[in-house]
Length: 141
Image (tube, rainbow, N blue to C red; front, side, top):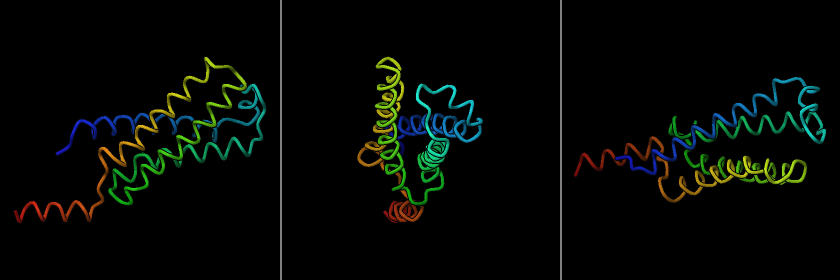
């Protein structure tokens, strides 16, 4: 049976996946000149594109292992990597645009940290083989 933590973690994972899909997709689709014009400090285009790829992979890592129930241990790893990514984004934003604008990446980092902790300790995901063993044991009992 699913508990409240599982539902909350899935909701946070879905929200974070949407955030990172949008952010990463924009970094890959928007022309380089338009992106650099919006930034207070011009970053190299290749770095921006690499960040976009990392964000897309992070979004996939948050939801696909749990949905497919394959390599479910990758979800807390992806969430942990996104925490590190967003900690860097928070520092960069704080240094270039001030404390008030750094609140958003800090909040995203905290949500990703909650997913990493929750999927490791509170409501770990199970892969298909484990779920079949549990079902067989429950049926035998």
